[in-house]
Every structure is written in C-alpha cells, then in structure tokens.
Image 1 (tube, one colour):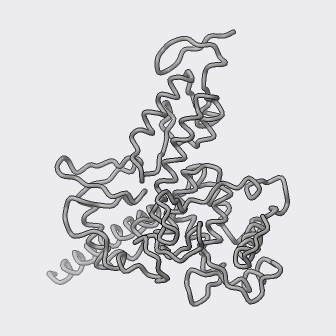
Image 2: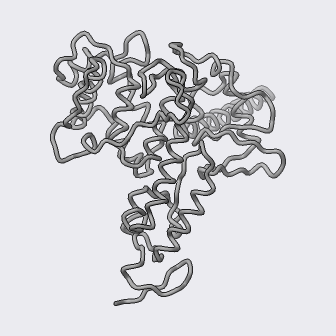
Image 3: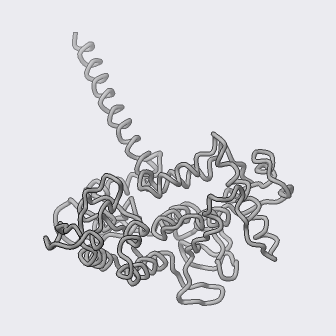
Length: 358
C-alpha cells in the first residue's frame, strides 16, 4: 500500500490512514488522522462556552463543516463531535424562566426528514398543538417556494452553509418585506398571504410567528455551528421568541419571561461608553482590551481596528450609520459610498473656493 507523508508531523502513513481533500475537491491537505484530530481538539479548546466554534482546515485555513472531518476521522471524531455540538448548544443556552431548566438550549435539533431532498414534500411530524400544525403548514409552503425565482432564502442558506454568505443577509432574505407579508406585529407572517403566493392549503385566517417558522427551517441544516449562527443572528434582530420546552414568550436578549417586542435592555444599550469593550461585528461576542495595539482578531477570525470599532459604535448610537453595522456586506458597501461622497464633497468645496478667488 502506498505511503504518504503527513504535512504536520512529517511521518509516513498508509493511504487509508490519511485525510485528503478536507475542505474541498481542490484542498491540498495530506494529514494523518491523529494529527487532524489533535488540530481539531486544540482548536475547540480555544472556544469558551458561549462562543460558537469555527474550525479551519490546517493547510488551506478555510472554514470547514463538521461533516467534512467526521467522515474522515472515524472513531477519533466521536468525542470531538460531542464537544463541537456542546459548544454550539451552550452558545444558545440560558436559564429557562418557564420551567427553570439550567441546561436549556434554544438551538433547534437537526431533522433528517425536513433536510431530505429525496421527497418532493417533507413529511412533517403530526402535532396535537394547532399552532404548531400551522407552523408546519407555513414551512411546507415556504419550502415549496424554493423552485420560485423570487424568494432567495433557500439559495442564500445553501451559500451560507458553504461559508460563502453572511448570516445577516440570510435572515434579511427570510423576512424580505417585498416578498412576505407581515401583520402589525413585525415578527409574524400572515399565512393568508402565504396561501396566495405559495398556493398553500388550510392557511386562511391564521397568523404565524415568524421565529417559529425560521426555527423550523433551521432544522434542515445539519451542521450545528451554521444552525446556531443563523439562529443568533435572527434573535439579535428579533429577540422576542418562545421557549422550545414550554412554548412560553421570552426575550432572548434579557432572558426574561415577557411578551415585549422591543427589549428595554437593548434600547438602553448593553455597553457603556468605555474604551475597553467592543462587540465583534461578525459573531457579536464581547471583547475586552486592557492594553495592547489597536489591531485585534476575534476568536471567530474577524480582524478589526479597535479605534475604528469605538468610532463605529459611537456613530451607531447617534444614528449616524443608516445601515446595520453588523451586516458586514452592507456596512462595507456604505463605507465605500460614504468615502466617495466625502471625496467628491471636498473636491466640490475646493472648486467653489477656486472660483470665488478668481
């Protein structure tokens, strides 16, 4: 059997014990299974409970999904997979105010039946609760819309799972006001509208909480980190939700049993005007800096300039930034537009001054 050299330990191993094409068909990795397992273990140890684990290919340094390494590590992946999923669940964990579960997690489980593409229409589980049945019907209508050209959520969701799209864009596409109708409660979908658009049956007269439908849609995503990232991005914008255990109204931001639509804590701003703390604009983790240079790299991989982040935060509180600063793509586009506007404004002022002096 052919012997291959590991790119980490430089020891020779037979081909059956080597991991190749880890992050894709063009990946040049040639790593023995023990070295890859050790790399993943060290990477997971860097993530404290509450922070989502983002693992990278040790050769290409691109993000990888759990399936990409569990399929090649065999038994070595068992404990790593458990640790990986546990970190994802803890990032969505809070003390349930309804049944007081200390280990409650808001992360929905993966549902193989919903994720299956072998059937034309997913066989949704029967539920005695009428409201949950309506959620199932609405989700069924939304899934049927995947073939339509207008609703971009399924396509963006697939790109997101391949690390080619940001979470904010996926959430925005799901709640696209040009495509979905909302009741007076901005976080509810009018099922009558869905019936008209998607030709869904048995939906007339119902209004379904969009968060429940979104949570149901997340059950189609196999990787828990991708699932949790989308969930947290949605809950950051719409913290009013319902517990998975007792279906009680709760605010994910302040973790209190309440039916308020706008969290008072969020309105009052969670952070003071100190210069020692900022919030990562990619994973939203709080970062504290006591001393050091202005270049900071979050554990999620997002690189930032500390002074710029403080400036962005102050401007955002004064409502001087017209876009969501946590939507990295739109914020970057606005920065480019704003820089161009300032440059042309300076040129215009200079030209006016020259004409005045003539």
